[in-house]
Length: 189
Image 1 (tube, rainbow, N blue to C red):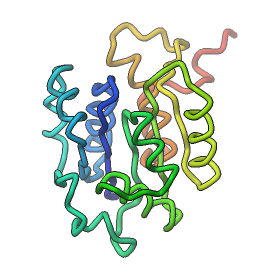
Image 2: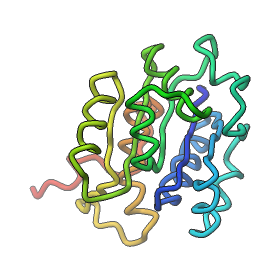
Image 3: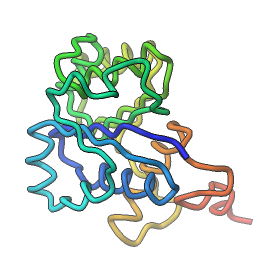
């Protein structure tokens, strides 16, 4: 299938990263992880260590020689799940001060899908302006706002309503694959 980069920052919501990696793997894709130091702390604190089990590669945040730092790599896209507002600001500014931000910059410059999942709220005007900047540059911002039409009965099912959107915008879902039922299944007849 395809190879995807999954960036994980220190925002709460590591379960979103774990479920994203799990579903990418389930659909036959390779996952390369880039996790910030605060991201590792949150993954551990929130009990999501199984995230690393779904990765083919785990890159060091300071390894600018990693293949995903180059536009000549063959990654199909990247998701930053969850994305802290600090990382969003660095992506919006194009600072490329670590491998996660550099990989996002590569996706933007190469016109590859880049999905950013901010998990913080409420938003300040700075956050909104940064979301606007990355959107204008070609990224898709998907706030961690689950839907309830499917009447999820577990936290995992609720999280998957957001993960389904992430995978859709990464072009990681085949026509026959879905994580949650489509809207038509919820319409009252």
